[in-house]
Amino acid sequence: GFAGAVNLGVNLSSGDIIVLLNPDVVVKENWLLTLTEAFQNEQVGVVGSIILDSNQSFIQHAGAVIHKNGLTEHIELSFKEVSLTDNEKLMEKIKEKIKKSLKKQI
Image (tube, rainbow, N blue to C red; front, side, top):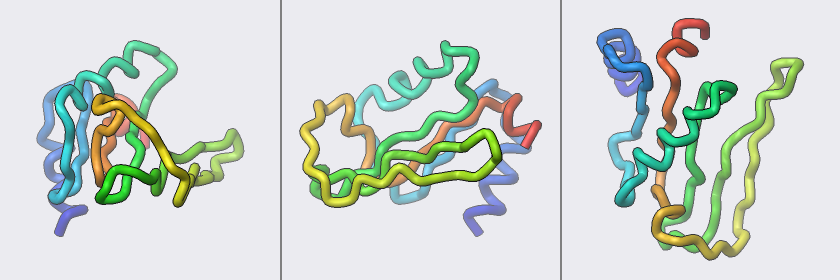
């Protein structure tokens, strides 16, 4: 399945950054450049994008926070109107980028 394919791809990858995309993701122009720029900050290990509805008018999910105690909390903004530029409307589904060095630590 998808998880097995992701694990295989990650294990066979040779780059410093791993990009995970669901098979039905729709991306916008320059989405990869936008995400890659975040890794210029050495304290950044994982980067994700907001999830918009199919009309790209509402934010369904805006990521998650990992607290110092290891617990996570989703940043959900369901049904809040948004006004984003095309560069900010990166996708309709989820995608993540992970520094390969961080994946090895997980």
